[in-house]
Image (cartoon, rainbow, N blue to C red):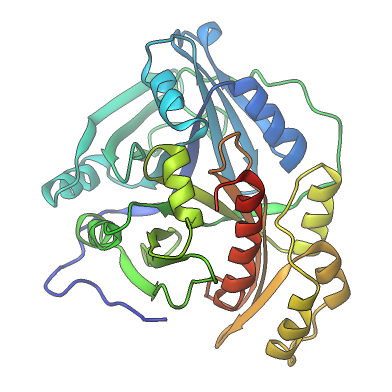
Length: 378
């Protein structure tokens, strides 16, 4: 594990990032995907946009839980960018949107430092006020939208933005409370040899700091390896980036790149205050997780011997545990939630630890390889 400093000679631009606004999915069937996230993960539908709200080319459902907000969008026109995105990538994340205090300054600074503009700053206005937005490109076909809500009263009216209203999907059968609180981090996969380019992009263009780098000898199994660097804005936005490394067989990152047809968001980590209760609830709702062998827990108990953890419950639910100098964390990973083996979720509970489960890398990636082997992609 190597801690990496900001690129020499690079000063942080004034990007004015305040935190996450939403994550937008572009999918083949928005109603079905939204219903799945509601029934399986306990999200609530809080808004809708479509022809009924004067949005003729798409339908979007706003899903919320804790501080997490997803927007699930599907195309109504066969030749739309949404439909084209789904043809290439399958269901996936298109937009990682952030709250900013000055869209024009943030966008201008990013473009001046090399970001590719997707859409210049524009306004969306209705009777609740004005929303200011702009977009830049990041890896693959993913974008970042900068959002300024200071002149828009939509939060009080439960309206995401102009064109949305509070018509909701019918509630799903009530399941146990899931208890997801917020976003912990969002992980992207990029092509082999391009990791440094994208780490530099976030440092140079957006002022992110490089927290830690993991080499292929740290994230490796008998068959495959990958490299990863974690960047963050110094506050709330944490973005690990992975690239495949040479190995005897195809790595999970290479499988993603082939099945997604390029770089993109691999997984979304969501925080909970009680991972045992959360995972119990998710399993009751039908969510499937990566399983680890019982032998993992003998070694884990030794690594975390000075922490009083509910080992029987962790083993029953296949929850992983790790520690660093600041404390410990508990984590678990779902199987992929899309038809193509691309996007999945992580559930994480932190008790001081600032790491990403480095002690669990081998057990996790061996579990992923077992899934790859079942698909014939290892």
